[in-house]
Length: 372
Image 1 (cartoon, helix red, strand yellow):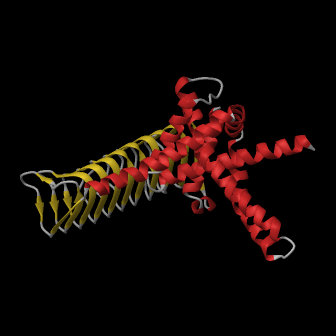
Image 2 (cartoon, helix red, strand yellow; image 1 turned 180 degrees about the vertical axis):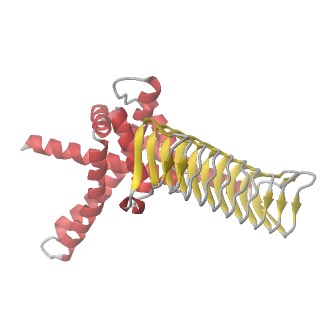
């Protein structure tokens, strides 16, 4: 079980950093992954597991994905991190791209910061470049050398920003130590709260976000969630035995199913288009494209079922994989939350869709062979 979980995280990191995989790197996986405080790694580090701690010095890039990630050492180049809880107290020399439920950055970042999650706090010494942030609650106490763009619910800025600031939020507060040297442009339900001592040296532009607009925004989140929930519930509860077997096979052969899904995504549409070019192959080409679309829809509906079952099994520490309304609701909820996290969240969604696609293809192929 631990090995397949580790393979999943490595597969996720491969999607996030596919071009870099061509070069030399240090790969680490397991339930607990450590870069010791006395270690000095000359290559890029790819770490995947339940709990990841990087306390040493990494001269290259760091790619880490896990349940909890702690970076206490130095990263010589970029850091790409995804996890439930992410804490960064070490320094990142270049860019930081991070996604997670709770994100705390206490170290310095030399380049840009791209962050998406539930609760985000930037408390470090300095961010040298720009900051692009999306989250439920966002607080910036670290000085930023470039521009800042934020989308969130509750946004609090309490540091010096050298460039322009653009905010789209329910609530914006400028703390007493806020100093925006450029322009401030924000769109919110109400005027920002500006504490004594806060300064905006450039032009301030406020645009009120109307109630109807907020309702539309919520609708754009709720309706896709409900559609996904209904579809996943129908598949999971009507074909419970099939889904249990799919989850079990996907977890047991994670890498194989992931690879199978990738091959299908690349080869099947190309083969269908080639058939369309030939006169005799037009019916097969049309059938192939229709089947491809159907397979993608099936995978998107199945991915949350797999995700929810794995999370529920891990929480309850069960031996078997449960498929119930509870696990499906959990999977759809987490899958939808991932869709709100730019880049990293979308990448994790894609991994589960590809796994569902590969697992579904294998089961259909096995059934077809049994009928022969």
